[in-house]
Amino acid sequence: MKTVIMAGGRGTRISALFPDIPKPLIPLDGVPVLEREIISLASQGFNDIILTIGYRASQIMDYFGDGSRLGVHIEYFVEETPLGNAGALFKLGLDEDFLLLIADALFDIDFNRFVRYHREKGGLATLFTHPNSHPYDSGLVIAAQDSSVTAWLSKEDARPQWYKNRVNAGLHVISPEALRLSGIDATAVGTEQDGKTVKVDLDRQILKPLCGSGRMFCYDSPEYVKDMGTPDRFAGVERDFIRGVVAAKNLRTAQKAIFMDRDGTVNKLVGFLRSPEEFELLPGVSEAVKLINASGYLAILATNQPVIARGEVTFDTLETIHNKMETCLGQDGAYLDALYFCPHHPHKGYAGEVPELKMDCECRKPKPGMLLTAAHDYNIDLEKSWMIGDMESDILAGKAAGCKTVFIGQGDFGQDMTSVSLLEAVQQILQFS
Figure 1 (cartoon, rainbow, N blue to C red):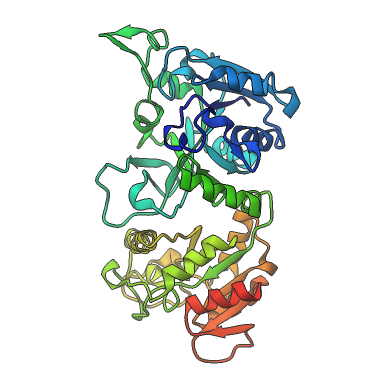
Figure 2 (cartoon, rainbow, N blue to C red):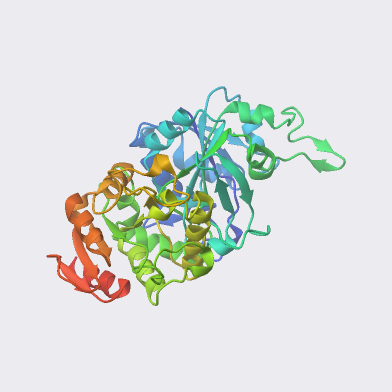
């Protein structure tokens, strides 16, 4: 599979730090960021690379040459006239699905896993999406249950009151068919029309029109992808790289997680929570989740929701409740890497119950099904992970999965540690670790 890396930007926001260097050559711990991207690709077998370049193109070509030094083959497409961030795609003669990446971010992801997901979905485009610490001023991707993208909201667009923290990271797998369906005349790109050069915008003209078609999907991942386009962001990314955070987040590496119950652990306990209006984060929860985010652990929520099987809450309402939770956390700079819920309930006889969900399942705590599924999904080493909860079922589920546990509440279930709040529990874990 070919990999196209868009490397033509000027990097105006970070030029104060590096005034004479094209953005792809900005050194990250002594090595250009684009070189680190290529090293990551080459280590996973992606060695057929096209660089689209423009600003200070000769410096980039002189540095990388034909790519043999890095074990790859590099071709160049030089934009003598700027074509927009996707105009070059119409000039490359691409005839099979390709990776499309950006050269102004640091990432280390399992590309084979990403591509495999794209092929399983069979769509025209797959977006690498992830949560971040500032969803309130980021573009949001909204998807259906099958992960097909239904809407893509720019940061300037109106957005719902409550939303899932899912942001496009700028990494894609795209079929050439998506280019053809855009209706853009490849021969016109780069020509003058009405006194202006014809350019192509990737998001606005190629990807966003696929929203709602069922042919574009999002790939949610907790792996490391961060823009380094400003001095502050560059400093943060470099710190993460030196600390080993970047490589550790690649899903080829075994992960460790802090699993959290929801009711009574993350939000105030109100019995069976049935509406978004009843949801309220407990004090210190956002700070606790931020500590997890910065620690190298994945922050994963696992909650029993029998109200679904009992017919008291719909899946749509539960989604709104969880969107409120993610919105509130995001406003405080915190995020969940994943969320699992069990909709089942074993006991019958409730008015309005959903018969097909009335079962003795493997995911309802104290059974460990949700934790085991998360471990499969994200390559989690459960023996290095923790479960925090306020009920005996949380502790038993954690132990059944092989995790260490922290109990928030009253009682003694033979747990490893006890605490009075999620924040205190996380602080204890991080100190213990």
